[in-house]
Amino acid sequence: MEADSSDAQQDRLLVKKVQSGDKRAFDMLVVKYQHRIMALVNRYVQDSAEIQDIAQEVFIKAYRALADFRGDSAFYTWLYRIAVNTAKNHLVTMGRRPPTQDIDVIDAEQFSDARGLRDMASPDRLLQKEQLEQVVYDAMKQLPEELKEAILLREIEGLSYEQIASVMSCPIGTVRSRIFRAREAIDKATAPLLEPTATA
Image (cartoon, rainbow, N blue to C red; front, side, top):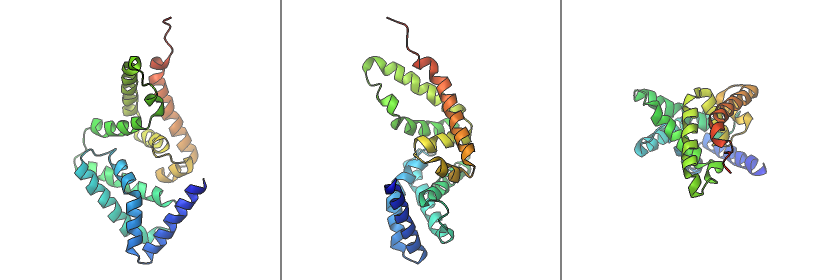
C-alpha cells in the first residue's frame, strides 16, 4: 500500500515538473510507463509497428494535455484512459477490424496471467486446459464491452474498484456489478469442464 502511494507521489512530482516546463521529467514518465502502455495497446492491435505508433501518439496526447491534468485521479489511470481511447479510435479509423483479432489479443494476455490455468501443467491435463481456454475465449467474446473492460482492469491491470470507477467514469457499485456479472458469465461457461469427473 505504501509503495503504491509513494509511486503515485513520485508521479505527481514528475507531473508538476513537466507542468513547470521540465521536458526531461516527462521522458522519465515515458520510460516508466511505455511498456505498460504498449502491452495495453497490444490488446487492441497486433502489428508491432502500429503498437509503437499508437503508444507514441498516446504519449504525445498526454504531453499536450498534461497542462490541464489536475491530479483528480492517479497519473496512470489518466494515461490508461488516453491509451484505450487512442487504440479504439485507431481501430475505427482503420475501418474496424474483425472482432476475433481484437478479442484474441485480450484473451492471450488474460491467460498469460491466469495462475489457475498455469498450474494445470501435467500432460494428461493439457487437453482439458486447451478446452478450458477455448471456453473462456468464447465466454469473453460474448461479454458486453463494459463488462469485458471492467474484468480486464481488475484481473489484468490489478486496479482497485475505485480506480476502475475513475477509468470507466461510473459509480463503484456499477463496477462491482459489472465485474460480478462478467465472472458469473465466465464461471457458468466453464462450470461443466471444472466439475470433478466420476471416473474411479
